[in-house]
Length: 97
Length: 419
Image (cartoon, rainbow over all chains, first blue to last red; front, side, top):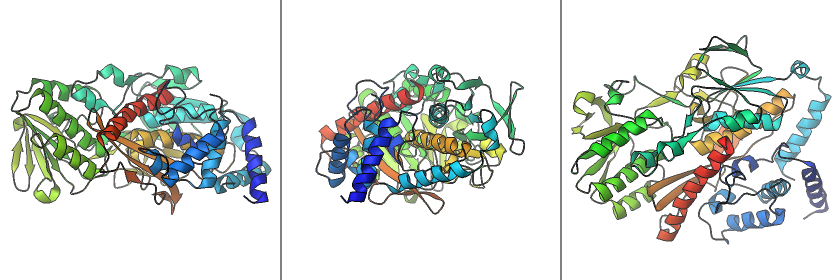
């Protein structure tokens, strides 16, 4: 990661920490809750709110690479770049569960 | 940093330099017509995006009846109550609910007239009317014929009528489904319905049979469906493609007969799924084109034909995105964010949208199709490499898991929209 990207990533984290549910989600993030709903209660498709950013990003990257067993997430993850995955992960991590 | 983020930043910065829009003087008014997965989502997420917005949701009925999983109602595996949702949680979040038909609108004055004689002004209007049956498209098929040959493609009384007919059918009977050319609401769920009715016949009335007469030669998830049919329903389900003579040109309700170019197919239970078009209000608003559907631009879902009117869900023609509940919900959230941005004088961010369609070949046999979309050339296109079906060689354990996920999806999406 270049110095600029580190700086920018840090900026995103700092901004995200100040955001609430009402802050605009990064591209793609709003679709996830169609399945990963915080309101649906216990589910195999668990809610993403408040999950550590690194965990979301690592899982998504592994789905994308095909190295994590999946039914559907391997297909969906391929639609996002690593930068987009990181932005989505950071945003969800900042949402209150 | 992602490019959309940078763009949003710049857009926000530029907007700060612009003079405040006139509507900033009062709460901006957004009217949403249609309370399904698209309309209820956009109304709820508009309030979440900006609590000051004045959001009115116009619905035909205080109870919404969902289509996904209504195929389970048809075969008696689910009761209609499990498909029905109210709007209490939306009103608790500040959405104003109006239970009335929208009679018409004046795009110049930006007003909507309701059947209850009230007129609502709007700064932005969202139409999410879903589909109407195109009663002129299938010869012999009108509202009276639908009482004998139910389409059951709008969940409610039609769903229950088809269930009663299936329930009353003698063992040894014949069920015929006709499938139209696309675009229509959830084309994949035609094959789910056929599968689940075949499951019902196999388990409850094993001497019976189902035939699909299709106006298409190919369809989404075809290999997965056909593999499942071969495995589960070799004696109970027959698919007649267009090139095999499956194209239905007319129906005769008096005899429950489907007419094709080569043959007549009579049925004990007849389920024609007719061609469709965007709901009536979209037609009268002038946002539908000659196809009967509504072309929209792919970032804000604003109509390409009438400014300040947005169209989402099944009524919209977006490019690659199918007409499905997941898609309508995803569009509702993106449209809400875009409208909130536009009303504060900012440029909406470039979105990504996901669609996932689960289908049940049997109650323990689920398959799925997933896609990711991005705006390009004035429409939504597939992000390359992301679209795909469940593996055609998936083991039974994966099919069972996808069936559970299908139910989990319904629980999640209805909780997000109505819960």
